[in-house]
Image 1 (cartoon, rainbow, N blue to C red):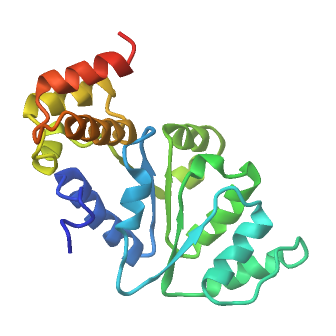
Image 2: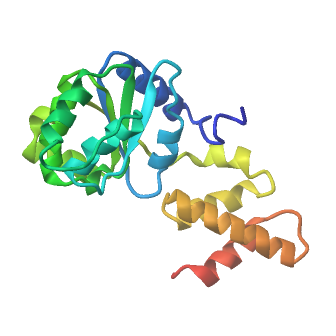
Length: 222
């Protein structure tokens, strides 16, 4: 495999991935927390246990649709209706050998959380990922649910890791881009791609700090 999806060489993420596996194999749940652009969604894609089937759920669904979609992800026929929701919940809690992933958990309807608590208590692992406000919300509204979750906080990958990946960049150029984008990984990668395009335009095979700073000065406000 290609460096475990490119960025799993980061020691914190390696440790977190092992921690997630330990939790879900024991039937326990996890909250992956981080700001915009730190790689939460990408980290979730790394979670591929051999012994459990993964069901990925859209966080924008209402509570009836979420429960139905979990069953549909397990190849059961389920219609999202109010009348069938209690039966859907009971069925979900009684099934085994699967876990649920919910990205963008900050978008979950407030009414969904009590249903998710029942699922968690049935030892069906749920891996949530979201902004820090998810933990803030749970602390205020559902501390009992938060107490059932192990919170893992993702931080931006350190510059040294990117220096290994972007070998056509001078180390100082990588540092300047990282600082200018304030750790936003999406913006960081976009600017690196743009710098490569600019270098190609200038017929340069190497992006030095002068090219990077010149590009940044035209792109980002001082």
